[in-house]
Image (cartoon, rainbow, N blue to C red; front, side):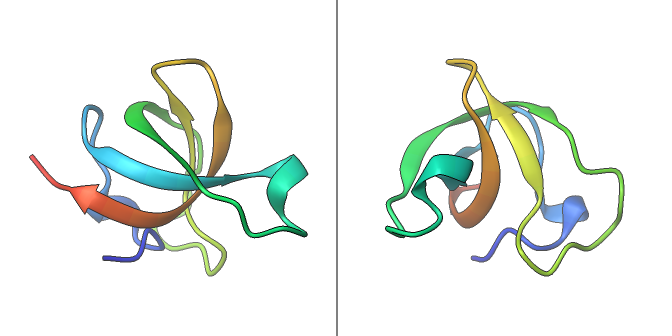
Length: 66
């Protein structure tokens, strides 16, 4: 599932995010959502979140939804 709708995102779900420094490479980083940073209901490039390990990026894929 893509991470472009804020309603699909909840703290604790497993996601793959694209960090700002990885935009050119397309490398994705996995983790659990700690905090949702995007306030808009939809964002075409992915909802921006902070992971439990402190990394911030845009969701490219939702692995698991609780």
